Image (cartoon, rainbow, N blue to C red; front, side, top):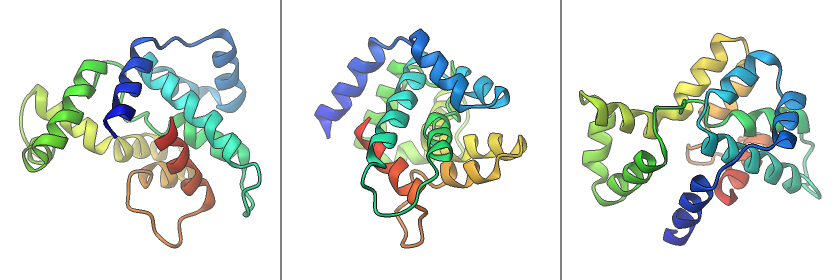
Length: 172
């Protein structure tokens, strides 16, 4: 787990969105959703791109039918609840440590505290709900339903796109 977090930090520090990445986003998302994608920080954009590409690979040989375009949209948008400036790489690193070392205090801080740290912890813990609300406001309720649940405990009735998104997110 710790090595995975170190890998995430190093990937965030070196994050760059290439021309090919931009073209992939433009092919995969309509303009309104592109604006949400590009409102994320560059490290979050790169993570979302890795997640989308990983999810695409996971569909090969998957035993259930999957809508690849829908899966790509969900993967690209799964972290839009963290906009640029909400939780930078250092802030996210601190949030991860705070949540791991003092989970009750971290949750209390994010679930009703006041001030900048409370806002950052709220975004850390609730970015899935925040992003889903943004998507619902734009009329993308199917994507919102997947994104809202991507950090929840898996359930037996989870759609295949949600199961693939969770797996790709964990690997990216």
